[in-house]
Length: 198
Image (cartoon, rainbow, N blue to C red; front, side):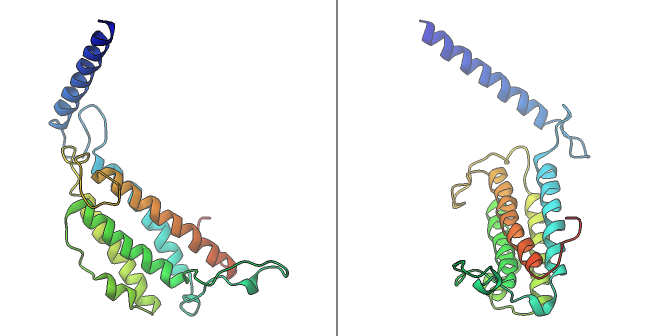
């Protein structure tokens, strides 16, 4: 009997929370704020993407064109160390990988068709083209995030590498990009450069 009462209480509580959330979802104002003071998921995610974009574009622009093919090698470490860097991405490959990932993840978030083919990005060799493709991938990501609504934010999406909702996939895309941003910062430092603001 006690177990049934607990189950009933949990179910009633969940229904109350869901009903309250649905009522708030219907009361959005034009400033993308929930009536209760909560921010819309698209606005929160877009702000997070913008911070990442600012940092990533900063390091991509800071690396000189003649260093874009730089990758760490054993030669830059102290004698006696045996680091293995045979398959490490170059700075250019890191930037291209982030651009490709942005298109991949945010297409899954939104259902929008990317305006750049990943094979075209992969073939790029100049700093100018790579930085342009990276910037384009962020523009696409912002469009994709704008499609996230309170109603669809936590709806299940398929084919998203285990990130089951639009919100989790959009947030993961930024987390993934930050991993590569951190590596690219080290590449700058190995070349005597410091990204702005760090």
